[in-house]
Image 1: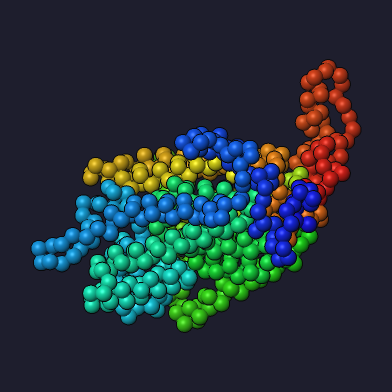
Image 2: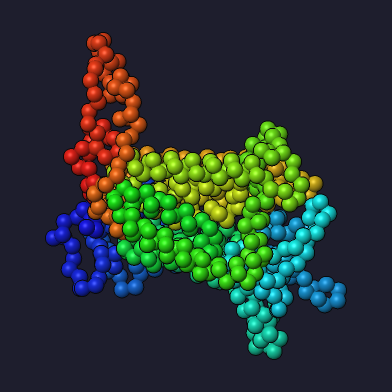
Length: 566
């Protein structure tokens, strides 16, 4: 079953091999944002207002929702590049030599800072005879000691940087002959990297739109997100996001092995795509389709090992650098632990640490909190009255990791954007969160500038971090509400309703494993329905067992519809 609730007689005819996702859908089976979203309805006023009831939908020869979303993505990414362009400006000294213009804290004042620029020289990518994980250098620690350093990123991201550096060297060689425009090598490197990172984000937009065929316009939120404008080129995370979303797209197309390959590649660029396997596991347990999850997980692990094994064997010490640094890293400036430390004077779980010492207690606590959150998400997945959607659980898991982790680099918020759009496609709500999250960048930059240089105190920055964390936590609460009240879920209600656009092999399946909810575990005299009745009339406290529950313990609902895929 595909999980489609519409009548088969209303479906347009289509040729063999054409799926519902690629077929043209009439307005009654599409989500129309200008009808459903007050914010979009107001935004359409300059162009004539919301879509008319008799408008032709899906018949334009070129402009489809996907292409419009990709165009919006190109515009947003261009704005993002202009936002970072101030940090690749150059000036000429008295000797006629060009230098990168980062004078007087320009990267903070202009809020254009990007890791891509300093890493070009810091990772020795500017040297033509280097190779990631083989090349090493020595740096002085805060304690005055010297330590050997290597490329600090996962293998696929390290290779991505190295390839871009080689393209830069090739560009400069041709530019020296006058056939291409010349510039500082770091500026050329940034532009080449930005172009490929932009292509990766456009791929994420494409995958999001393809996943949600009945709600294609939701991908516009991925395209125009304020977080994209601020952080698309802050680091290299769009590569991992694109691979993760393509992996979920493959899962939705019932291709678990391909999904595993793409998730494995994403994990080789950034470890977070592996977290997506957890929600898939509990949902497959619920419907008894663990074999498909096993194929996805096995191919993901094999792919990850295939990418990493050559570097592990040949450049063991360099390969370990990423894991070593993340183990020894303390609480990041915008982690919840640093917020508590700043406002309370708390010295941290491990107290004062010297350079190179491992914050063992902090690592244990943050890991334990994340595992506890994952266990809670699994409980929700197995007790909800209706099988939760894949995107809902994926967002909860990734958000839990960011909230409990000791590091939340600003670009990590990009991980949440496509998942949030698929999990809770409410435009005004998501744009509010994205704007809050993006605005954290401004006080962060001015706090790095320093109060002595007319910057902001750290308290301003950490205050916005608290607001950002609260916004993400509220999104999690709203998603939990829609999981336990599927009628409030915009994906599963209304004319364009569907079971789960990301369901794949899960769609249309009956529940095989459902745990009792908390309401069924409470004593009869504490059940909410009994308390209401006892307050409504002064009769003696009723006795007896609670009413039978449906899947997941939703009292009085679902007992005869267990496993329904409506």
